[in-house]
Image (cartoon, rainbow, N blue to C red; front, top):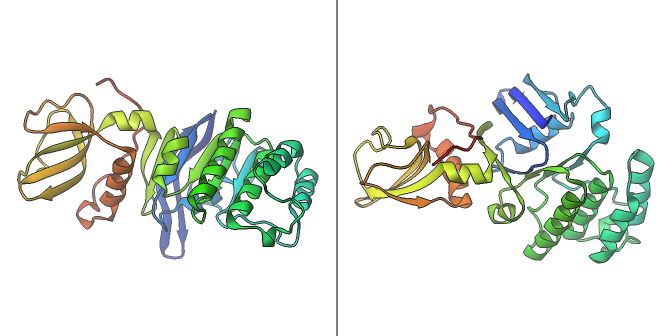
Length: 304
């Protein structure tokens, strides 16, 4: 069973499409980075996955169930929304008690021990906590459900570097304990690279890329060579797609997707970093020149 399966998933708000024709599988056991600029559709996708929104068209299953229909699914999914919603007038201890009353599977000792170990005061109202402390409390509450799937919507956006490190440490401790599948929405690639093994890129409401980070980095390369007219249309041996092209003077730098060794001696080949790969796909969809090019979802490795 996949953690999430989507087929032709689309969502429209009046005349604006937030998601368009997204089809993908997210296998169980992954820690997936969901990356995209603001307005890319990340929050919409996560809200549909937990049943807070209904799609305009297409279908989605979460842990094998339809989110808006199968209530049993909710007990197996942890979700931390973008604004880390907590009851402002309740203390941390009262939030833990509330979680115990509203979840059939609840490990309050794990949450309480973890929060105390990182100095989160449980006797203060959540409204008085810092942004990092509230994020840690929300994460601990989600993990205390002992979920099979954990969805996190931009939990790192407002945190300073130290708070981000502590948050990711708590997250990975929970993953290691329960082997939970995670979807972590963010645009902070450097942080995601430390903890994630799967990558999903959303831009302009469309899924640009989906697969394990190891496979995706193996399938892409940076090529550097002399500038040539019509580079994107000219065949380069071993290249199946030119994702990005930057030209400076007489030199051209390409980010390409490959299906084997690069056999054109005119190009020098380099490995691509995760950040460069993400920026290449995001830049491609913001470039009007590429507006009509097909969206590609890549997920399977291949021999080099």
